[in-house]
Length: 320
Length: 320
Image (tube, rainbow over all chains, first blue to last red; front, side):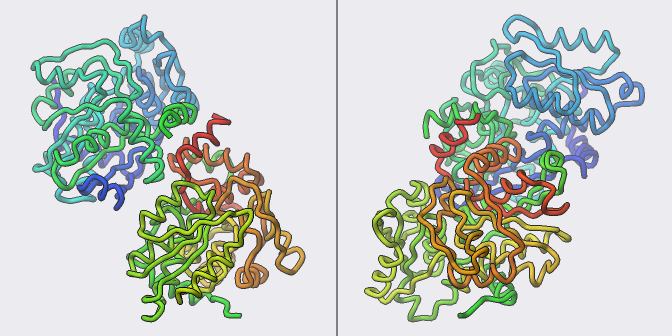
């Protein structure tokens, strides 16, 4: 198995420079006072296509050789990876086909099609997206780029934390959302070279804590698709690449409930004036539950901001 | 009458440096493609206390002499000016009393009290806030700082545009929300020195176009409190200072309806991932209506982000 290294994250940072946004790190006196620690929010909701996923996708596609570029790319995704592949493919002049569940958020499907990709839908409950993706790739000679279990994806995702470490010194911990583990393990690799004393925590939805159970068990555990509003972390299992890296580097795995995600989504909107999608609130939700547990200077990766307005209104309206 | 000058804006910029945030200018490829012009969004929703008003308030209060500092400050405001005075007073160690309508947004009243100010309420329909504020000031020897009709307030508000002009060259126009005219006329002064060819437009709620009517008539016209969701621009009349400056410098006045404000509020949240209050959407709403009318490179001042979540959900929920 080919595992990415800290050097691969540095190389990815060179590749995405001037193409991906270098997103801002936001701070809030009120948030710091509320939690009693210093919080640094890495705003990947301001990334191109609205989520960190662009980093990994562009890092992978920009390394395609001429044959791959001509044959196109296939991806399966619940949303943000789809948009990321579609936008990267458009920028690089590569044909993209995205396999997407029929119940994917409208905003994500529209954006994917808006970037010029072909969308093929499947029934999340009845069909296997990997099989569909593989068949499509084989039929067309296209390259399948999975959403997290790929060295180039992991290395690309790590560039968000690398920027955070360059902008903010001496972080005690970083908390990042965890679905398949691409963002979290990329963050671990970035920390290895740029912030070796910083502890990296993954935060997954309480409804689907497969990563925690997998690390506890020492092997990848597969679960049914979890029922959670964190649609970017509705993964059934980690991949071999992300599991191997997590086993080696991760400081711990936390969980957050849907209610906690909604609370943070409303807080970030009303106090910080930023829109963050439910999945993007996982890190802050875990920190808010135990603000004393991660040191004094905490980095939080707000992974994305792609939430339908109707969905936001529905979720936040229950509490507002 | 003592009118502020471009030099006063420069002096205000020195005073607020390191105290106010230098807010970011955001751009969006999708927004530019949609409107067919280049748009530069000055994000005063990320300013301290969530709106540009902090600039003017701090500029005014930081010039208090020792007697004024000891006697305190009084302000009347529908919201953001109140928070701005309260926060500036706290920073400078000055006692603040705020006269606020009983129907002011909860988020704004709570924030004002949270900054340690005393809040005195009045009935917007039945009582005169100016009279209440003046009486309070006289009784206590405090200094009354009005929300817009004051040279130091206008000069302070102009620093937002000054930063915009420093960050973005060759703007054809700037569109800014217009209530009493403090932000717009401050923007005019900033343009005089830093961007003399840039045209400055004020945008007021269609329900309360007193500024447009005043400039057309050549005298200040007073209207009943307009019924609009743009609670930061529910002014009944311009002041002598802002009217004199507007008459001299402003390129034109536009209006936007409540529906247009909601449309832009939802667009900014879903596409730019930022929360902007209804008043803050006035500039973009006017631009979206006639994108070809203001040149090719347009600055938009998003004046604030203080909107109750319940209110946001109610407004955006109607369209989402």
